[in-house]
Each structure stands twice: as C-alpha cells, then as structure tokens.
Length: 246
Image 1: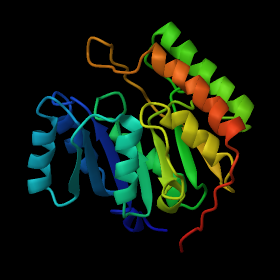
Image 2: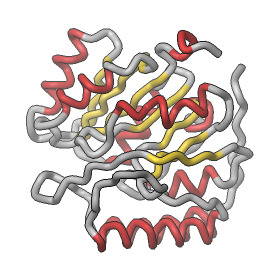
Image 3: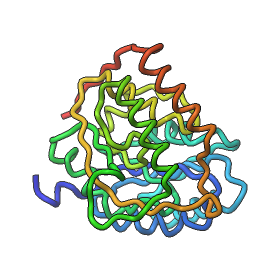
Image 4: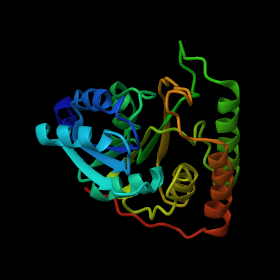
C-alpha cells in the first residue's frame, strides 16, 4: 500500500468538556495530519466556549463534524456518540487537551493501515528516549489498574488507560459501550479480549497536565475502573462478534 492510499482514512473522535483553552490548537494539529479524513468533536455539555469554538471549526473545515450533549454525561458517553458517527476505515481517540501529540497518528494507526493489527494501543510506558518524567503516584495508579486488567483479561498491555487507542472502524462499532465516564478504558479492553483480534502496542510520547490545568480524572474514577475490570471480565463474559470489511 502506497503512502497516497493512507490519505483521509482516519476518523478522529475528540470528546470535549470545558476545553476552550486548548481545543482550537488540537483541532489545528489534528487537521495537519494527512491520514485524517474526518474529525468528530463531541461536546459533553460544556459550560464554557467549547461548543462555540467547535461550531466555528465545523463551519470552515469540511472534515470537522460537531455533535453535542446538552447535559454532561461523561467521556465514555461522548466516545459512544463519536464512534457511532464514524465513517472512515480507522478510528482513533484524541483528547482535547495537549497531553498527546497528533503527529504520532501514523505511528499508532500505521499497523492498522498495513493490516498488521486490528487494534493498536499507544503506550506511555514502552521504552523511549527521552521521556517526560510523570507524577509517581499517578503512574503507579495507572500501572496497578493495567496489571489488574491484564490479570483478568489475559491481554498483556503496558498501558490500559492510554487515550491513544486506534481501531478498525468495524471493531469499535461492534462493541456496545456501557460506561459513561472513565470506565470506558477497562471496559473496552475487557471486551476486546473476547474478540478474535490482533492487538498491538507502540510507544507514544505524553505531556501530562496538572489538575490546576484542568485534568479531570480522580481517585473515584480509579475505584470505578477496578469495578469495571471485575464487571466486564468476570460478570459479563459475552463474546462479541465482528466482521472485517474488505
């Protein structure tokens, strides 16, 4: 497959909630990527100018689509809405903050395009040099949740909680997403483990922001993640079928 065949093949789903400070910058950087053919911004009931900014971009950029929740439902709910609307062959999640670099889309999505994988996780913890030094307890919390997820799902990933998850569109649209908040990550990992898939990991850079800068996930979400690991790996073991499109 030539590089030209990669053009416009990717749907980027951007869940947003009070991201007026960073949304325009992220949209600009996402649209710079040649493989991006569609950007779906889902505003989850923001109280600031996030929805207004997204509508402005939709009016001037044909690749941008804006979807809206009138009341805040959570990241998982926003992703569910975005995934349902995706039309390109491959789909990736992009947070509206500046923690992940859209310039790494080819690195994450490349194995999908080359038909080497059906799902790719962009791991913050695979070896790369240099790397940003992250907060110790936040890192240990992520690694603990990843360990628990691996034990129950039997998928050996290094970063279950990563934002950068790339999918074949038919894979993610086959998964019934039940979690409305940050439980999406352990839920989708558990459900992927019960599908006949080729799952790959690749390293990505990460530029963490602080809670003062708007980070929203907290300890309660960690507790919920533990429940989701148990719920979707033990209590709900239904197999999910999907059909690979030509």
